[in-house]
Amino acid sequence: MTEKCLLIIDGFNLLSRAYFATSYNRPVESLEKNENGIPVNGMNVFLRKLHSLLSQYNATHCVVTWDIPREETFRRQLYPPYKQTRNELPEPLIQQYELVKKELDSLSIAQLTLSPYEADDLMGSISKKWTEEAPQAPAYIYSNDKDLFQLIDKKVSQIIAAKKQDIVMDYERFIQTYEVRPEQWVDVKALLGDSSDNIPGCPGVGEKTALPLIQAYTTLELLFHQLDDLDPRFNRVKKKLATGKEMTLLSKELSAIKCDIESLPAISSFERSQVSLL
Image (cartoon, rainbow, N blue to C red; front, top):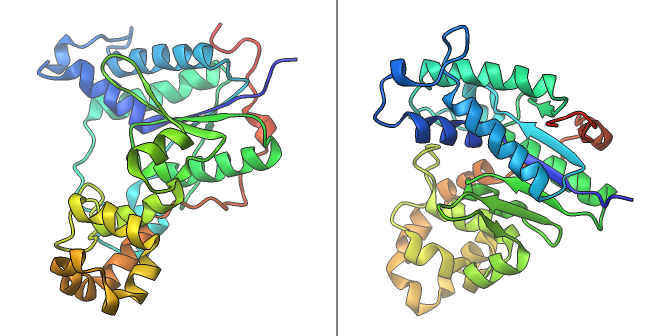
């Protein structure tokens, strides 16, 4: 019997990287096109990579998660400036998104979009549901988004694209690299903020300080509880932490990935068809 293995694809992360990597400094006219004249440069790379990952990890289950329009996300309701500084996607990329979805349907690869949640929340809830239903079976999330580090556990790893070969960030490797547990990553991210998502973080607290703070105090809540008795090595950011407390806690709420979405389809719906990608 084949051992179960789930592959979760961060759809826009893979497609956008594939598109920009193959269109950099090239006019649209020079891109590969289909018979209808629509560029397919990003789609072709997307499908090749998906095929490679399915083969490499012997995935029995697979799902591609997609984002909703940013104005629909619950985080925008929580914090209106959320993702407001992002540029619009180029039209050829949007066209290829539609083509990829159709191609995945024809290949019987499961896809999921669910308002008001983002792809991160879908990946978090799917991986949590998978580990509950198949506790001994591995799951792999393919994405270069470090926000997803908070989802890593003993059976859930993240595959990160790199120049020579992909990096598999598993539980042990994460702890060795960052000296915090994956579930603490959201606290680190909350302190740092994220300019690409317009998450404020704690002004004045940078990368050299955020990680050591969480290594020392484990969570934001414990850090703020002990702020009056802060370790002297962090004195230079003490006032910044006090001033930025409210925005930092909001940033944690914005950065936290939901892992408890109840309206997910059954895990069995992600099982690969015998004909998919043959």
